[in-house]
Length: 333
Image (cartoon, rainbow, N blue to C red; front, side, top):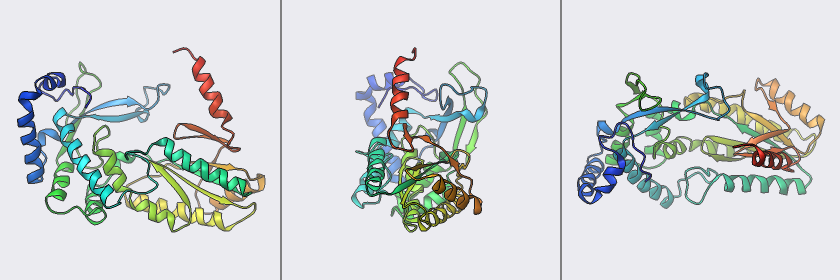
């Protein structure tokens, strides 16, 4: 693990690592005791929130432009890493991972997600079809996870019971956090964390993906293609010009997705959700726009959109992506 020191640690992480031959046994005892009894020590459930700008060019005076990154005690990270390793082994053994979720999985990345989506679109284009792509944007997804719903998923979808389930219940309960911008700034008061999983933790991303497990089966029943990476999900569907039924399937899918998200304390940010059509004509654009508007779902049509770091355009030429890379190469550092 990287030797990053948290202000909650009694000694610097570097010092702990240098004395690991002496400290390994007591650390192992703490971890073993936690797993054996299904409890997480309260001291390991406190996090320091470091506000981090989502993008360097955003206005630092607007709070919504920050991402709340949790800085956790060194021992907490070790414990989480042990549990995450065992949980991933369980998920892999029983084939419980969502097939089209490329986040938080060994051998998967944004590249594997994009490769599959681009390949599907190009094959469809060769067959004379157009493709509509919808890039869903979730608002503060990690922060609104309902703990009782998550524990229900862990028990009923993942198969965790007994001491293992009790450990996760302990991990999620009685958590506290405070905000401190930098080491010499005044910290805020402690507040209890009643929703969400810590961003910046080892287990947080994996637990989020398990919270979203139902999403795949919901989308599939509408015969809509999808691929997810963490909390970024893209829906896409191929169609012939002036064909109506695929759009009805997509509209029905998005409507049910919104309903499911509301029930699960998640929020689809329609202002930032974008739609792109590869191929097609003006009539197709107008038909899709009017279809979504008729059911009260606003659509943000765009000629190009950033998808997992790569700019997609309506012709899939990737010219905008190339220009952006070249531009960044010549910008002063």
